[in-house]
Length: 215
Ligand code: AMP
Image (cartoon, rainbow, N blue to C red; front, side, top):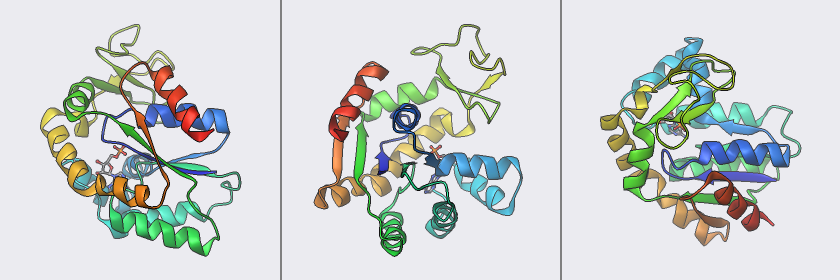
């Protein structure tokens, strides 16, 4: 099963993706994670991506599509996979369609985790991420506080606020989302692939709604 998860920054799609891959036993492909890993290793691609990520802008399509094409050629994707944070523009969605066509595959579901803008700002500015990239656990100062302030419950590493979770960057990211990514909703709706899920409420309730649209 091939699933694309859509939703604004802070919609909780990363959290839902993790639950879903556990349940379905398929890998998650997150372009944001790929860029953060590349940045940590200071590869040319990672350093290029950082200039965009720090400003809340999208990394250029050709760079992102190249990275995804490389990832989709790997042999661990037989049972399917979940795309998280990709596609984010119409050219990316079209390129994905072409890549899949060459592999005689199709997307099965494009799930939209739907959350109003004001809620997204409140959520993102309180988000804290584990510094240990192998863990990557996420917390929230209001909605999901760690047991000990500033420390990861899972692995004990310090938590930090991602540069792109600072308020001015969040506003920019939301603007970018509404302009460049929201058109994908119509794109997938017209193909009969869009599954819309209300992304407000307890995490497990949202997950149950996702399971329902997949069944
Ligand atoms: P994320 O973790 O998905 O929120 O991604 C963090 C940042 O990485 C985004 O704000 C973009 O700068 C960049 N990025 C991740 N995925 C994409 C994509 N599909 N297209 C363009 N930029 C991306």
